[in-house]
Amino acid sequence: MKHPANERPVATLEIMKQVVKQSPFCGHIGADVTACADGFAEVKLPFDATLAQHHGFLHGGLIGFLADTAMSWAAASVAGDVLTSEFRVHLLAPGRGETFFGRGHVIKAGRRQIVTRADVIAVRDGAEKLIATGTGTIMPVNIEGQS
Image (cartoon, rainbow, N blue to C red; front, top):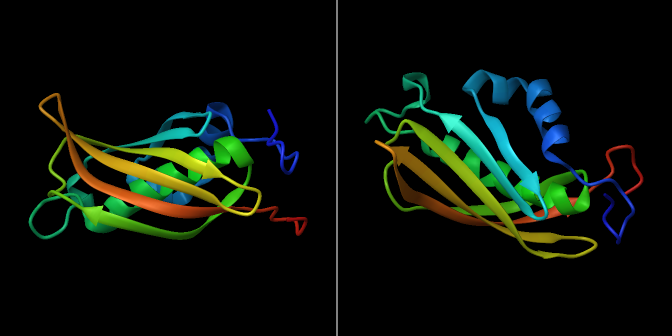
């Protein structure tokens, strides 16, 4: 599938799984992509004590990573290759859980920018809890210089 504004191929779940395999950081922290299509993406991160801050909660930087990555990959599902221009995260509750998800959605996709939102969810004892929410502006790019 191609984005009509720029005729670049958009990201799919299969493409993003390859991206994750090639990303040293995703491998280091254990992140994976579980969905990527039609303006939605979901990133999964199992909790590991090495990812905790001093109180034992998931580190806020990783909560930001989940929001940013979910928003970027949601944008990539409608626009192809992208880079984050800016994002903002509101931390709502401590990161307590066995598994965490970043769920990103495209709000509006334009030719030069894509406005997105994300929720970060903690799963603890089978129950989901919203721990952060965010917004971001994502830019379609062509790394080879044809943006």
